[in-house]
Length: 437
Image (cartoon, rainbow, N blue to C red):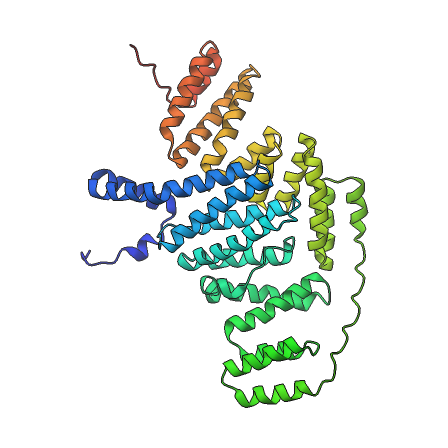
């Protein structure tokens, strides 16, 4: 193979974990590379780790403290972006947006302080996506989820994300918008789709489509002015003058027809009588079909959160409702905030450990301890199986030594449980021998 072969196309096909292992192995042989990586970790990695820690603790804080902690996270993001950091800041920025959005559904933000943080978080997320574009279809899916299934916030401007979305992401959004417009004759979903269609025309630079969309709206001064601006920006000055002249002939605006009253979904009564994950998801299905899910979701989730604060069983129901919506991140935060049952947290941890291994370590440790308290062979065998899983999670999190220390302490505490120790050994988990003085 030629020494000038560009390996970057091949390297881009590798997953992050494989790349990390290769880079780590090379750094172990190259002191200069290792020092450079350590310097980057100190200046950036530690900042990101601290930002994630602040988000982890912010969920348990009051409004004022929450706003302060989130503000610190946003300051860190802005500082790194302004400095031209090469770190991928989009995951942290998106987590911050999602976290603030969820918090706004639970608190009374009359001061608007938390909402202001959300606007800033979206702005920084857009910058992070432009700096290090994520998968365009994944980004498009997130935008569509916020727009069509969210509580009405955050406010997203497609123009801010256009370069990160690229042709593939824009096409994904356009396809969904076209489907909604074809299937929904009225309702909130259609209104959202019409707004997105206008933004898509602006982003793509399709002047004719944008003018047609604007011209189809009821005549208003602001709409006419926008048409004139669009035509002038495209260099079509004669058309802009002609449109302005026509707009001046209207003596008054046409009154918009009164909005149609939205029927109450049949499944709403079932949810109100027995709020839980099953009735919530039934309400969701019916409301999605009628295009009225955004308003229904806000009140239904508020009820489930109110109940979740009162009992573990209700917290589990809230988690299951969010999982049923494919909102895994939100379900995890809810499970932590409202102390869902251990079985539910373990189930969530099994999927979350892939991308966020460090966050799931406490859950697996709690599970191991709970299994050991049963004091029967089957539970000991399952505890050993969970220890193997915990070892893998620690390795992914880069804390393999911490697992060895934890295991040594665990074995020392339960050394008289010979059947447990035997199961651990049978699971091929190396037990560190105590150091003799």
